[in-house]
Length: 292
Image (cartoon, rainbow, N blue to C red; front, side, top):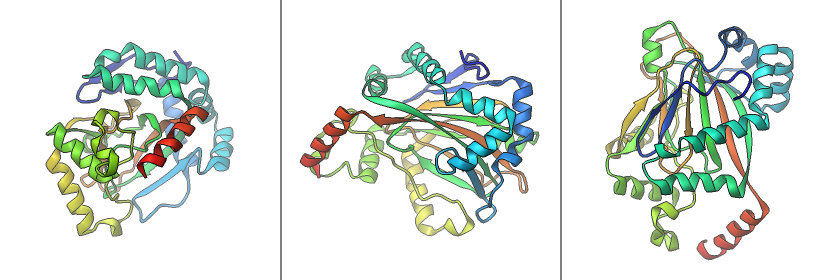
């Protein structure tokens, strides 16, 4: 395994897609140093008091500068951005292939690494009561997401600050719903079996500030909840991490409507993306000629 990040102490929460839950993923001394210097690293402006972030892609210069100044963050960044980390993650995926309800669903994920190149990004997130990362499935080019929690000593924060994962109440209705949201219910796409559809990004209007709460946003969330139900909510516990692999029905959310007032929710997000190889890009362009 990697030098610091220990992905061996896991439990699996099974549903239409598995969620992997890990305890004490970092050495305690390293985790405490990361936690103690979190504010020094992220800095920056707050959006309406609810949310802020620092991203290794969009804030690349600042991210590199900050990580070079802080020993613990540089150690973790260097490890996560290494080829060894990717290799270990794929080994974990292969070893747990039986956790997928359908072998076809697992095969879809495994085939992605055969026709793409993988790249990793890191982002720090800080949010407060009222923030709502409404249900979404993540970007289409996402391969996997790992969420490290910095936790809290407040039991309410631990209970409310985790990530909620959803499954369809009716798989057929959920599939139709996703087709509607992504435009895959029209033209030739409407005849393609769901499991053969290309990956799409689906999500509801998000609440990054108080002004984002509208009747349209509330109605969209209500309709989603009529078709889906939570199957697992992670605990916002210190040094715990959750992992999932992107598919079309990997719905999840962070809802801080009941989070303790005045307390900050801190997390680190490690995203793995797929960059198409040349043959894959050519295939997509030919496909689009027939479907657009």
